[in-house]
Image 1 (tube, rainbow, N blue to C red):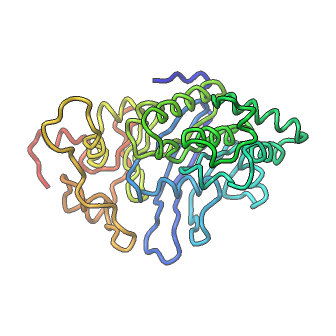
Image 2: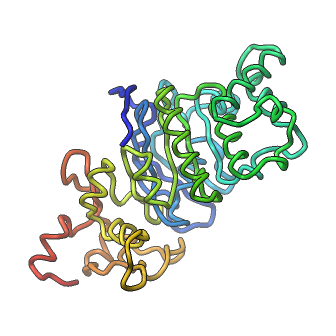
Image 3: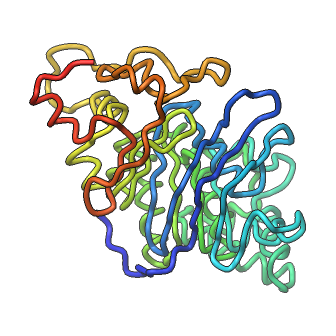
Length: 337
């Protein structure tokens, strides 16, 4: 587990009761999301595809599609109330104090410009420096993210780099203006396991050196164990469990979290098939009225289909949205749905 030398009582990011809807959607795609990220800390946002993880990141970056609207909630980033920023103020913040690494670097980097042009442009947009100085900063950041022959790479185009190298360039671009919060949206999805391990190690090292707060969006619990200190498990636009990595991995309580844990492949010999969670994330038009996981939950009771369970505190910072927590008590008593 990584150390947190920059631990600070004041959160870098605090999200409270965030609700986002899409035009024509009968329910909120984000429903009451509350998150806190501190300096030098990584919060992992975990869940299946379609759970609302990427929409959360786009809401924070001010990049929601035109059909989406923030209905209510607070988004406090350091001294900024993100909901009150003008488009110009948001543009000044993005790429400087607030940065993001997107899933697919090939669609995020401009194929018509060299890496040096793109990195130096990011510097000149937010810092009062000459082009020559910006190129020096670009070279330094490429060296920092361990790109070999960095000076030569400044003149290269994105298609001339491997997937792992392109991802390093995206990390470099995100970090070049020393952000206070870095949002990483599945930064290792398209990479093989060796390169994935290198990228995660790099992110950890850079976070420890700079004290940057990181919001890591992923569906890979192995990644969570490697880099995060805090975890928030999302399902169908709601946070269903959150707490420290130790608490979530040692004692997962929400049936969805337990299902995710059970689907992690093991290195040891396996006697049967991997366990899966039956069904899929419900579409907005068929969203359950109560607990959104009720239609897939093996422990669901009748009230689960009608009432939304609140986030209940179990221990130090460990909160679960389930009527049947602690789950082992109900199982020990032989209760059924």
